[in-house]
Amino acid sequence: MQAINAVGRRKTSVARVFLKNGNGKITVNTHPLEKYFPLETHRTIVTKPLSVTETLGKFDIQVNVEGGGISGQAGAVSLGIARALVEASEDHRQALRANELLTRDPRMVERKKYGQKKARKRFQFSKR
Image 1 (cartoon, rainbow, N blue to C red):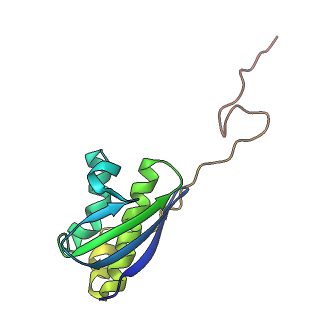
Image 2: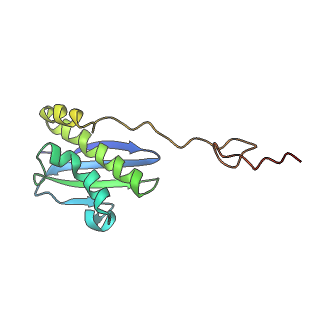
C-alpha cells in the first residue's frame, strides 16, 4: 500500500498526515508521539480515531504539524488521521462519524475590537 496523505486543521494549526501499513509507530515532526505530546489528554485525542476503528497497531503514521498551540495541533492531527483512515477504507467512515471525528471544529479566536482591551473585555468605565 502506498502512503495515504490527508490534512487536518484546528484553530490555526495545520497537520499533514501520512499513513502507511506498519506496526503502529506514530511520529510527529520527527519526534515520537510521547515526546511531542507529553500530556496524556493530547495523546488520547490524537489516537482516538485509531482506537475507534480498532486499527491501533496496523499503521505507521508520520505527521507534519505547524501553527497554533499544542491543543490545536492535537485536534488537527486527530482530524488528519481520521480523514486518512477513511481514505484507506470506506468502512471506517461510519464509526468515525458516530464519534464526531470527521467534523472540522469551526471555532476560531474572535478578533480584538478597537476601543476595547480584547474581543469582549472593555476598558474600565469611569463616570467622573
